[in-house]
Structure formats: structure tokens, C-alpha cells
Image (cartoon, helix red, strand yellow):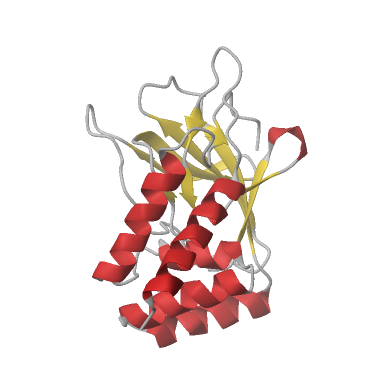
Length: 209
């Protein structure tokens, strides 16, 4: 059981994780900020955002309502989901493709509601090494549906400064729903995504894959 003090520290660590993940930008006439909760993205030179995936079946979770979500590889569209008219895509999405292979790369594109086609946030995804994927998949299996174990696993990942795994576990689509976990998710979402300068991806014209 996580103590009240540990819980406060855990919430602060999760929020800091998300705030540090992708600094807001949104400059330019067509700039906008998209709050990405999972996977954990890291900005690189040239405005690129890269996410190293610790799980072979990562959750996709943007806090903003989306018009379109797609995955591309080598210039080929692998999967796409478009929102019906006036019904945005919301909430965490399970991984829609076969499990990723070690080191596999692809592009995740997220287009918010109200944005024209071709104006999407792009995140470069890369699966972790084979040993990391195997270890984390074994961990996820051992956690089962025990919310206390899931919460402790997030806490341990943060202690190791493994932000990618902490975010992946906290927002895992198949993670259990418990008052403690849901409260942590809600707090992280509210503080990280509704605070000026919070974690966000600048969604400009999509670069080629």
C-alpha cells in the first residue's frame, strides 16, 4: 500500500515526467499544442519528437480529442482510424497492430479535431531492445489485475528514472481500474495537460516518413 506521503511524491513525479516529456511550442500561424500522455515522447533537434517504446504493444493516448490517428512505416500506411462526424476519438487506444519487434520503427500521426488533413503531430516510435521488451512484457503479465502491484511498478520505474516505462504502465490500456490508480491518472492528466507550458507536441505540417 502506498502511503499518503509517497502518493503525493508519486503524483509530483508523474506530473514532472509529463511536463518534461515534450515542452510546449505551438509557434507559427498554424501551430498548435497537442498533449501526449502515452507513449512518452522526447524532443530532439529540428522539432522532432521521438518515443522509445518499452512495451511491444504500447498504448496511444492523447488528451485532446482527435480527428485521425495513423501509423506509418517506410512511407506505407499500416493503420488508420478516422473519427465519425462530430464524434472525436478520445481516451487511450490499444495498440492496433501486431506486437512490435525489437528496434522496429514507425511514425505515429495524431490530427486534432478541427485541423485540416496534413496538419498532424508526428511522433517517431522505436521499440526497445529484445531484452527490454521481454522483461517488461513479463512484468506486465506478473502484475495481473492487482492495482496495488501496478501502482508500485509505476513508482519503481520513476525511482529508476525510467519515464517511458512509468508512463506506459500508468496509462496502459489493459491496466486495472482502481481508485488509487484512477486518481493518479486523473491528477497527472489535469495538471500536465491543463497547465500553460505543459507537455505537448507541436502539431505542424507533417514531415515525410
